Amino acid sequence: MCVNERRKITIPPHLAYGVLGAGLVIPPDATLVFDVLLLDLWNKEDKVQIRTLHKQQNCKRTVMPRDFVRYHYNGSLLVGNLFDSSHLRNSTYDTYVGQGSLIRGMEEGLLGMCVGERRLIIIPPFLAYDDKGYGTKVPPYATLVFDVLLVDVYNVKDDVNVEVQKIPQPCRRRAVVGDFIRYHYNGTFQDGTVFDSRSVWHSEKRSFHTTKCIADLCVEVLPLAKCRSFIFHETANTSNLVYFTNLNFFKKNILSYSRNSTYDTFIGMGYVIAGIDKALQGVCVGEWRRVTVPPHLAYGENGSGELIPGSAVLIFDLHIIDFHNPKDQVDIKVIYKPADCNLTSAANDLIMYRYNCSLLDATHLYSSDDFPEPPRVTLGQGKLIAGLDEGLQGMCVLERREITVPPHLAHGTNGALGVPSSAVLLFELELLQLQKGVPEGFLFIWLQDSPEPLFPAMDMNQDLEVPLEEFSAFIKLQVAEGRGRLHPGIDSDVILRDMFKKQDRNADGKITEDELNIIVNEDDEVPKHEEL
Ligand SMILES: [Ca+2]
Ligand SMILES: [Ca+2]
Image (tube, rainbow, N blue to C red; front, side):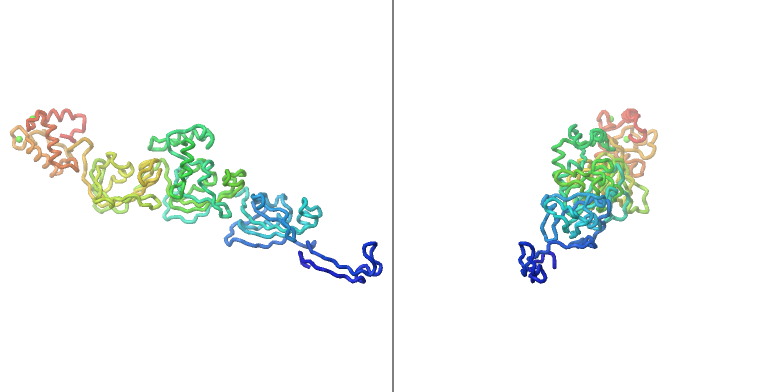
């Protein structure tokens, strides 16, 4: 007979109670008819039976003794009567395996399971509740059938598991503790269910760069001591302090998190769950990592809000956009340098240059090709973001460079149009033209010692006065012969008129020796040969 089989068994008297019958119930020579339903069947030699109903192909970890598991189950008797179900309670059964907290057959039946696997585990009574049964629904000597779906497994000894999925080459630098990183992530549970990253803000401790710290939020978000050290953490090269801001701002920013904006934080300083803090160390820009974080390095036994159940293993797919250290300087990589490179750009020089600017994930931001002609700028006068100005110095004409500019030397924590907060920028540069400049405030400088005495040299026809024409001719001669330099980028006749006016103190249209000497003496405090 099979379990659940029902038979009508007719037994003639000579195979039953015969001529005697049995007491008052069964008369002599009675044919007996039994209606039999087989409810259960087992043998002392039976073992736990496992039937796999579904199993992932890619199973890297299976349940081992002392693991902690979370699973759903339906428990039924052999005939199919359901006696218990985690599904009806709407929560997984969570327990250690191999420590005697389960019936023996279950301890054995869970071993070797993968997350996402579904098994039937059939347990003979002597490995279940034996002669005692359990409650009103499990009778003594019942074989039990558990339909188990494994949701989660980890071991308290587990560390963060990092699988590098894609790593760009070359990886010029790896992130370390103290770096500020921007990354995207997807978070799932081990069974593949996505949890909504937007809603775990209160635990994920995002950092902000703003202006105010509300004490009660600090208490809520971080231990106060930690919050204080965070408040007074100063980022290099900026006067910005790093703060947590008020609750509404905090919520609004977290809740507006989307695939289009990165998650930004300092690494290794406790602003994110411990497992992520650890897993971010050693990443390269552009890298993809899958990180499996056991609950003791995530949200622990209590989980987080409605979204992260207690003791849940979390899997994060991380994509690193960029990172930098507040101490980083501009990184300059020379792509091409002409053989003849004597004249190089410096502060005060007027240059024309080409550029392409992008984020480190290759998102194009802006380019000189977007304009009718390449830009001209005087270096060293605060007209460009600091890192670009620095990266354009020391170049010769036709030299090409790639420079990496950390945010504190670019658009900082505020970002700019199209430039996210705290973004590292990559510039491709080519110097097209270079006109050596003069220090700020000067119109002309001597490149060699000026003639001594100056006035007779300037008064070329020796009539003791120097009108504009003579003055202009003299200065132009100095420039032509390499002894002096005019301010680049301005019409030289305009400059010469300005210079002449300054020297011609009484404005009679000519410079005299006295007028020239007064100016020279007034300018004594500046280096002698840099101005007339
Ligand atoms: Ca003259
Ligand atoms: Ca005069």
